[in-house]
Amino acid sequence: MVMLTHKLRMIVRTKRQREALDQALETSRLLYNAGLEERCGAWRKARLGISFYDQCKSLTLLSGDPSLHGLPVALLRWPLKRLALAFTGFFERVRGGQLPGFPRFRSAARWRSFGYSDRNGWKLVGRRLDLTRIGRFPLHLHRSLEGAVRSLAIKREGRKWFALITVELSNAKSHGGPAVGLDLGLTRLATLSTGEKLANAREEKRRSRAIAAMRRALARAVKGSKRRGRLKDRLGSLKRREANARSTHLHQLSAALTRRYSTIVVEDLSIRNMMRAASGSVDQPGRKVAQKSALNRSIGDAAWGRFVSFLVYKAERAGGQVIRVNPNNTSNLCSRCQGLTPSRIGDDFCCAHCGHSMDRDKNAALNILARGVAIPVANAA
Image (cartoon, rainbow, N blue to C red; front, side, top):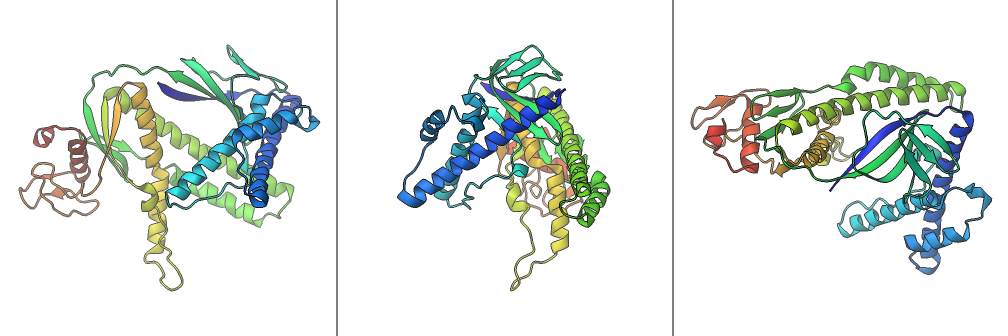
């Protein structure tokens, strides 16, 4: 089974509907913070752990509280479930020796969504979404929803509201397409083992001047002023346009690839380690800090991780697969004789053993394909 989430724009027509959505969002945030305070207080005072089910029982006792505005219990349980998942992730990171990251209290600026823990309290009727005690909202349904509807979340982005509807789809049969290797890059987003090159949209670089100008204006504005609030909204709008344009580009490329190929092989890159800052410390300052910062921005702008995640779920939906392989020396091995020849970024690859010469990125893509699929590499070249 494949779980797919559709993001649909909600049409909010009246002030009362907007206030009802804001009220539900704020109630959800306050419940999350209250649940976190309860867990911390119980452990601090009595070394007592509180589970999600314990908090649901406490919520039942508060069912008549006027501060809950008569909202459905499924909506009220959703922030408690989100809190339980936050603690589950925290304990897993502690056991794994990672940086724990204890769950934090959420301010209004850091809480932008609410949802429903089950199918109660909301209903999808054609192109309309009915939310109990909140209102009825037409949806921009740009495509039909296939599969069984499983869950709903409501998200606010600026002044717009979106419905995130998750559906469950059955796995499709593979279309029997060929396999392809994918070498990720910055000058080009990716190079295929066939030699085809995918363009990097570079959305951050394209919009950097406008965003920098808005940030300078925001820095000059008086804190707490109406002008600062307006500038903050405009900056958020610019960043959302950048993110949406990047996601659209990656969606289009990943959809085209999964329609053509049934198996896609990519490098298993540790992007977080690649983007670590080079600033160092006072005692041991970093080297080439500005260059490393620019490289990190370029990697973030390319959004390799998001691109691969799009490939994974689209391939699964189409009955295909994405295989991750070890990235070690994929650019330095000859795709014909497998001899090791160090190469520099930007240069064509020329093997020191057999004299084979070709585009550096295509050579890496062929090595990636060979590591994921058992084929004669020389024939693939």
